[in-house]
Amino acid sequence: MRIGFDAKRAYFNYSGLGNYSRNTIRYLSHKFPDNEFYLYIPKKKNQIPNGALNNHTLVYPQSWKGRNFSSLWRSYWLGKQLVRDGIQLYHGLSNEIPFDIMKNHVPSVVTIHDLIFLRYPEWYKPVDRKIYGRKAKFSCTNADRVIAISEQTRSDIIHYFRTPEEKIDVVYQGCDPDFYEQWTEAEKQKLKQRYHLPASYLLYVGTIEPRKNLLQVIKARHRGKLDIPLIVIGRSTKYIKQIHEYIADNSLKNITFLQDVPNEDLPGIYQMADAFIYPSRFEGFGIPILEALFSRTPVITSTGGCFEEAGGKSSMYVDPDDTDELIHAVRSVLENEKLRTEMQEKGYNHARKFTDEIIAHNLMEVYRKVL
Image (cartoon, rainbow, N blue to C red; front, side, top):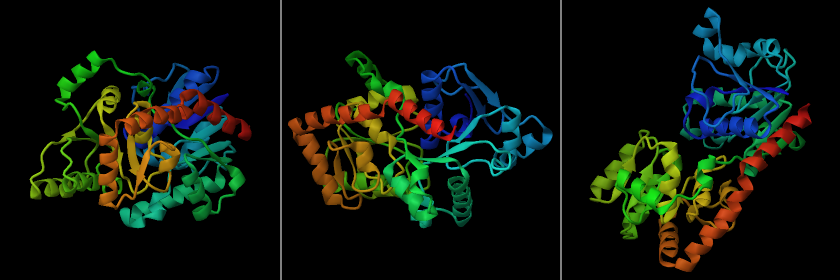
């Protein structure tokens, strides 16, 4: 089978959407090497997504028109290119498919990650809401199959777009296989020295933005008089100003922000953490939760939404806006060794439901429904 992918975010995005795109290409190229994979990107970039095999072809605009109007090439003109390339199935990996794909009669699948811009419009600029909404609605209406990355997202697609239930498949995402391996004590010690990590710490990983709710973690640590250090890893936004102001106003110490941590170092940092804290208000799925579970690190995250799908029965869930609940959860994990051990082992067993093999098989089953 010759499959085309919207690979823009696989090459140019290093957050959740980029990770999903890279992992999907990797899963399928490893598990189904007899297929041909065409990766469509808006401009030339030679770096291959981590872990992808050589059974792929990179496609980018060649004409003056395509190079200078690459966004239009990707969203409005790509259908003709897919026909020329003999693509049998096109997979839009991040909430969109080309607007001309129908008239060029190319079968398609789209992955919808979330509809947060409709649930919480106040978090987005009006122009962004309009663009995201138009692309997502068109894709859910016109793609042959719709992949939702969680039951939560599936429910939102049905609610907001009235997409027929029978058209939607829930296929969970996974995380980088680097998280499957346990680091040796020697490797951990080298990493600890490199980043000046303390002996014990709480860990937060994620974009530093209001929705992810990092300030709540810092407030809980302060108000609960939790002495354990906090390590924060993630890209900053304007929200970081509120974080720094709160830290300064309360003279807080032992909060470390790590920037530009290579992906290959993350598993070791997770594995040494006493607990992973993720009080996000809403997600499509929550890959950092899986990363922590594979690392055998206890997870404290939010109630509702997709969080229990990702975290399973062994993780601890709190109201993301209830500081006292979060304080109690952290204390329970830190002070109860039996509970901590149980969360580690049961959490790891839950995470094994999200391995490459399972996800690749489920994706291919969706493709076969179309063809």
